[in-house]
Length: 479
Image (cartoon, rainbow, N blue to C red; front, side, top):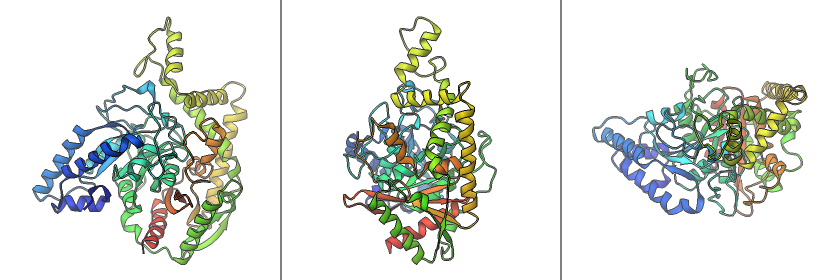
């Protein structure tokens, strides 16, 4: 039994039945991390003492014959934008290089309460700003499928850790595609829940009206198990929704025959790689063979999604990142002569180029004389994008699109062309703006053996349907 290839259920069952121990599982994953991660760079901080303490607790439960919790003994990675009590949390930035939070984020606390074993903190683009994981202040992440290519961003470390069998599952965050895009590039499953489905308490904010926490996993079932664990109302987050959490696992095997699957022409236009197009079209045909009805829908305001996103997101980033000033916590410039000089030097020395770019864009969009022309107009267009989805979902149960216009690109290929980098998110930002759930699942490979992702979008708080469609496609591929 290769311990590094286990899924949540197989890992939990193996521990419960005493075929292995949680301690052995943890040691096997740390051994693989030690062997592989120097070439990949998926982790920033390892939490071995914390992991072994949790593993010992799980093993004692198994030895006493007690039923293990849902994620009992399962090794997980946590994107380094989620606070972990007593463990360095950097957000991939020099400004938080030595920040030790006094509390856990709610998502992490719920995972550990369910028995998960946290292996460490996964690398990411600085403050989750990026589509390639090249913006980390510490080192880039390489794609385990091809080390010359990016893993996607900003949750590149989380996706790479799962793809390289250095974690069973991982948590990521998605503001404009940062779970789904790296899932596509690395050939794993990435689920972004509805905005408000998962508490953001303890998540270091990028854009507060867009940020989502969700899982990256090897299978749709594992993603559903993690979502079931972390979802639900949290009094610590006023934006978390008081909406019942369904049994996602029970919904997985409901037949998909008769479901209406929408296909929007706006997602199949110029810029879509021919190999990606064919793989996605083949996947749509596979869903049709499973009994789904394929329906054409229109999302007419899609062309405005990228400019809308990069006004709303940067404006909120400008506001959120104002707190990093060298006064209360984090990096502080040493040679400052006055308070204002300390502010300026601290932010100049400790923020990376992409973060500075987005702060400046957002500050400009919010400034006097430009607020109405940019931010207010972007919010109006955001409403139109949301209405597009509302209208489409009157006709269909889910919408299927490519996750990304291309497969993973080369390291350094787009790092000096911000617009080209931003366009890598062209098919993912719309769901964040509308607050709807989306999942990316593998649907084939290019001639160069690079993974291609299929994106399935759903109605607000209807993760069950997109998981059901994703599981049906995944299962058909295994049979």
